[in-house]
Length: 127
Image 1: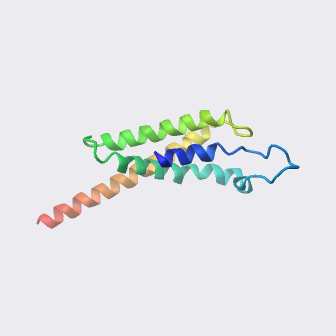
Image 2: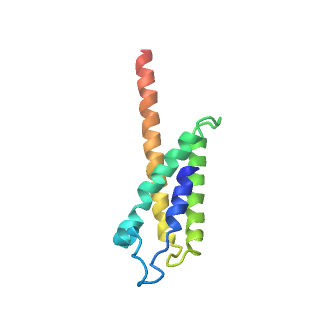
Image 3: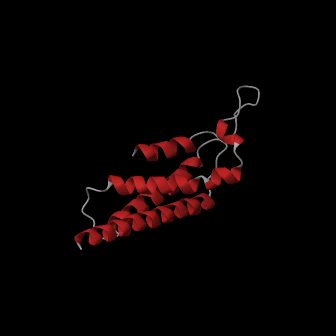
């Protein structure tokens, strides 16, 4: 939940200073837009892993927990883009949602890899 609020907080930062004569631009504006966009991938990888860990107590078999974590993360990405449409100097972007999806996919791959290795180690210990 805190991770999700962190993402929404980041997207609440205005995209441009309201008045060039008062104050400086936010720090994130020093980063090129392409780098800002690519940061969606690790951010949503982390969000998906965090949701997956947070849902550990739920009795969901197979890919159920991973699917729910992915759905919650993707929903966060879509809501975040809608939210940005109300922030001065920011705008919603389908590209950002695609990059969010890439991060989610990366997380699912990493989670599946860790799970497969854990199962293989457990099977090896039983022999």
